[in-house]
Image (cartoon, rainbow, N blue to C red; front, top):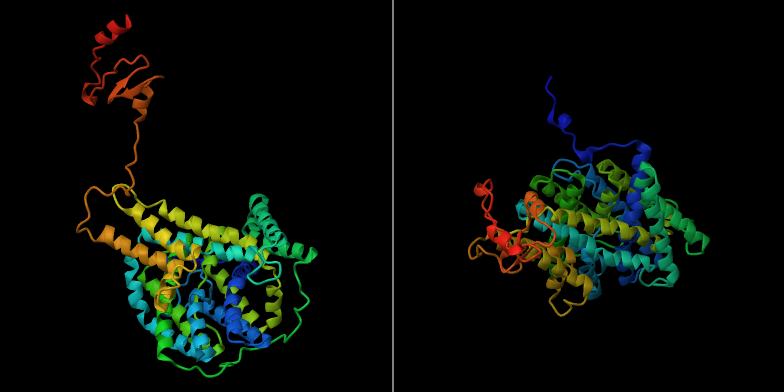
Length: 503
C-alpha cells in the first residue's frame, strides 16, 4: 500500500495536543501578546480624544479582529493563511502614520479609509512580494530574526518599569515584581516536569499576578464595571473617508508591515522546522492584508504577526498551529466578552515584563543560532551582518534619529525590523549576488580563515617548542627539522643537534 507523502513526513506545525492542553497553551499566547494588542487602541483612542467607553470599544474591537485574523493565518483557507503558529494583532508600524492622519484632521474615519485601500493594495501585490524570498538566505534571515528580538527589548523594558505613564513608573517595586516573575519562570524551567516547564511562562504570570495582588500592585476591582457581553458595532466611529495623501502614506506602512510579516513567517518557520517557500509566504501575506482590509469595518487597525509569540514558540517547543488557533478563539471571546478582557487587563505590566525578558531574548537567540550556520570565510558576510544589525538597532537606541527626515522615510526606517531587512537584502545583493567588482581577496572586514593544527603534529610537540623567525625550535633554541609527508619514513639528520647539545 502506498503511503501519502503527508503521512510519511508529517509537518511539525500540524502537531495536535489534547483539547485542554491546546487551550492552556493558547491562553499563554494571548497573555503574552495582550499588552501589545491593547497598546495601539489606547494610543489612538487618546489621540482622537475619545472617552473611556469608546476607548474600551476600540480595545475589544482589536481583540475581536485579532482573533479572527489569527484563525485565518493558522487554519487558513485556499490562498489565504500560512498555516503556521503565528498570532495576529494590531501592528505598531502604523502608529506614527495613523497619528499624523488623526492630528491633521482626518480623525479615525480617515485612518480607517486609508487602511482599507492600502490593505487591498497589499493583497494584490502579496504574490509578487513573496517572489523575492530567494533574497533571504541565512545571512539575511538570521540578521532579521536577531533584530526582531533586539527591537523588542524596549517593549520589555517598558513593561518591567510598569508601563509608560503609569503611577510609579520605573519604581523599585515594579522592577522587583518583574524580577520575581522572571525568577519564577527560571525556577519552573529548571526544576519543573515536562509540562510544567513548557507552561512556565503562563504559570509564572499567574504566580506573579497573585504576588502582585498580595503586595497591592494588582487591582481587580473594576473587572465587573461595564457590560458582560458586547459585539463590536460596525463603523462605530463613522463611515471611512478617503484622502489621497493618507492612502499613499498608509501604502508605505503596508509595505513595511509586509516586510516584517515576511520576516516573522521565516522566523517561525526556522523555529518550528517547517518548510517555508514563496507560495506559503504569499498566502501568509494575503491573510495579513485581508484581515487588515476588513478590520476597519469593526473599528480596528492594520494587522500583522506578533514577533513576541515567535519567541514563545521557541521557549515552549510547542510547534502546533492549532495551539495558536485556540489562542485566536480566546481573542474572539475576549472581544465579545469585555469582562474577560478586563480580567486579563488586570495582569500588572511588570509581570508581563518579567516574562517578556525571556520571550524576546529567545527571539534574539534564535537569530544568533541561524547566523551561526553562515559561512564567514573568504566572503563579506561578516560586514553584512555587522552593518545590518547596527542599522536595525539605530532607531531603537536613538529614537529621534530620523525626526528631520520626510515622513515616508521615517515610516520605513523608523522600524528597526524593516531597516535591518532592507539593509541586509541590499548588502547581500551587493556582495554575494553582484560579483562584478568584488575582489577575490575580501577586505579587512572579512572573517579570517579558521586555523587548525593536525592532532598528530600537536602530539609530536614537546614542552618549550616554539616558532622563532619562521623556524620551529625546541626549548634550547635548537631548530627542529620540518619534513614533507613523503619523507616522513626517513629519519632526519640530527647530527648538528647532537653536536650542539653534546649528546
